[in-house]
Figure 1 (cartoon, rainbow, N blue to C red):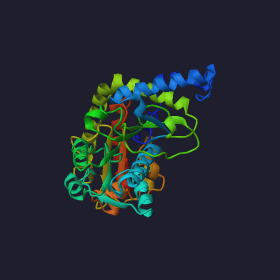
Figure 2: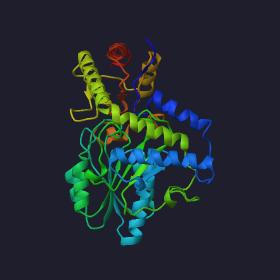
Figure 3: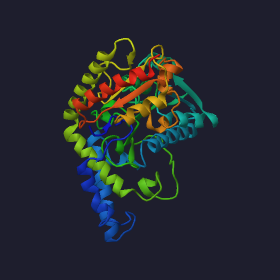
Figure 4: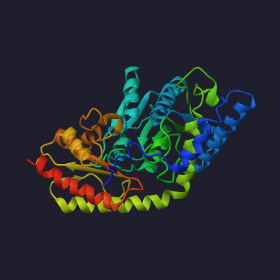
Length: 385
């Protein structure tokens, strides 16, 4: 069997229609969108059309979409931009997030903490879902911002994002949502949900790498993260990534048409995968998921009481046998440190280290899962205690 790719939460293969769409912008359409001549105007039109496509998809105004280099920049843009501006305008300096967020959020909070901001980290349950009751107790009149992810990138857990937003609004605080893993896999109406800002990244849903966007509701206090140009309405300096932006918009158009079908396909695959793991053993594995998690992500812990945990060797064993998976977030899995998400969810260091994430796309098949289950069976005698 050809090599099997079960690391789609790290990045997805570019969709053929996206590739086809961006090719002319690598050759024929090369102008700078800030130029007033025809070469520039062609690019400017393409950018604004892309902005409209994305805005329509999430029920926003086009003026509320800011193109970025990806989800990390979008998270940084919102967290630094809202917290610093709100502190200047109102004096509020308390910001809240959860312990299981992506490092794009956690590291931003850490940096703001060094600058004197009061940073609070709310706990999560065993599936890495934010503890809503703890958030409610932590909110107060000095809270300017709450940052919470839509879908956890390691466990696939879906936060109670509507309830989190309602609590935040009731407290008259701003809400930023990291939707990098959930965008284009769920219908997200930003006005209906009441988000103040939201981050997304194209390469998580079959678009190109190096491009994403920030939705920022009109009136949200937001200072620039990058300076040096008047692009993106003076809030994000730098010549726009036209190839990425066109590809991002095309990926959104495809998602709009295929989302429900894709969700059903991967939901069936995930259920089939869980059945396969349970056929190996009901005792030796923890399935870090439940019914209302993302169908695209399956987190499995090889329990340290049964297995000799060696995350690098385990992943290499899978890879040598033709299966690509990961130990956690792609941004940190290269270090192979115990996942902070699994630790925050109550796992021991050993069990967190023995957790493997399999993540799917609709082109994966049940035969690939059958093969992977066989590989896991082969892995067992090599690592069992």
